[in-house]
Image (cartoon, one colour):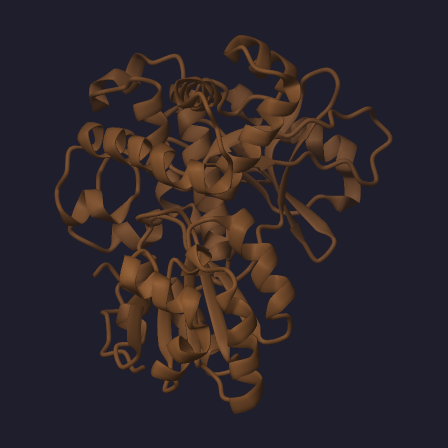
Amino acid sequence: MIPRTLSKKLRMLALKFPVVSIMGPRQSGKTTLVKNVFPRLAYVSLEDIDAREFAAKDPKGFLTTYEKGVIIDEVQRVPDILSYIQTAVDAKKAAGQFILTGSQNILLHERISQTLAGRVAILKLLPLSLEELESTSYSKKNIDDYIFTGFYPRIYDKKITPSDWYGNYIQTYVERDVRLIKNIGDLNTFQKFIKLCAGRIGQLLNLSSLGNECGITHNTAKAWLSILESCYILFLLRPYHKSFNKRLVKMPKLYFYDPGLACSLLGIQARGQLATHYMRGGLFESALISELVKERYNRGEEPNCYFWRDKTGIEVDYLIERAGMLAPVEIKSGKTIAADFFDGLKYWTKVAGKNSKDLYLIYGGSEDQKRSSVNVISWRNISSIIYPKKVSSRKVPPTALQG
């Protein structure tokens, strides 16, 4: 197992809460993580037909069977079990009784939050991060290798060709998860919709345009986008518009959590195609913004991030909010730093004034630099932006974990 950053937070929260829930996309490593962190707990997957039937038809008997504690995988398959878990934890009042995992945010998050309020800690696990991979034998020298391969653990563990793995992943996802969330009649149109989303990475979201190109209504496009968000396929980065007098855009920007999946949807079948592909800049930007999001989730925190863009089109790719101050981040895929890389940041400092702090430029090169007031960061060291003073724990070996 590649050591996961979330392990520390998961172990700590299980000592304080009776229930800990871990959500994330399928194949992000949730099952492997919880089994390694809690090796002494019983494990049951509700994907198993017999286990699912037992939990659905006799929930009290099911929970009594695992009264010493249990990992329940894919708990969204029997959502009614959550009410019985509430009763069980209220009666026993012990920490770490139930470790729950799930792959669908819409079906799981609201139900858990409502039913287990005050009793549950909720964590999110996305595919592997750069920080997690850089300390392993899977580390890659070129960012394009990471973008094409993506970050799903099974690709690295089983040495599967990305083009083979993602094709099957997309098909499996559409056949299983989409139908569990919403009865979509025309799956071919839905698949086309996903591909059209991949072609809009890093762009302002225009639902009407997206719907028209796909041949669906605005409302259908909105509903389908929510499905893709709920299953951790893509996410929307919201614009920041507080405390500014200038007219700013209000539409979010669209990004994919995993660049390898996006490459597959765009028809990129080899790493060499990336160098001249029209979406390379967008894929680079999406990959690194996703890394910044992972850094927060991996430490049990929600992303405190936005982008900024005014009506003239001048923008800053990413804003991090820190104690009322804003740290702007510009992202450029070029390996050589050009003067115009700093234009957005210069404009931002004039507009933001005292609200601005710690300017960053992430680029495709390998060396960190200090340019006037801007911290120039290599893509490899992106985690230093979220936690500038943190000491890297990349070389810490996996330990014998206790349940």
